[in-house]
Length: 93
Image (cartoon, rainbow, N blue to C red; front, side, top):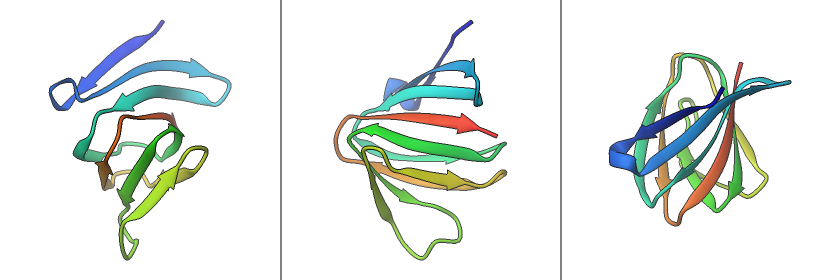
C-alpha cells in the first residue's frame, strides 16, 4: 500500500510505493532550501520544475530540470534549493 511522507513542516511531501524498479517515491517540494540524508543509493528524477543540487563530491551546485536525473550515494547528505514548486520521483537501490 501507499505511505505518505511529510518533511520540513509540510513543505516536502511524497507518496512511497513499490514497482518493477523497487522502492520509489513521487513527491513535491515547495520553494526553500533542504538537506536530506540517504540510507540507500537514490536516483532522483525531476518531473516538473527545477532542483538546484549540491551532491557530495561535486565541486558546485547544479540545476536539474524536467526529465533529468541525479544520483546520490548511500549514507550521504545532499542539499537542494527549490525556487518554484517542483515534482520529483526517487528510486531507492
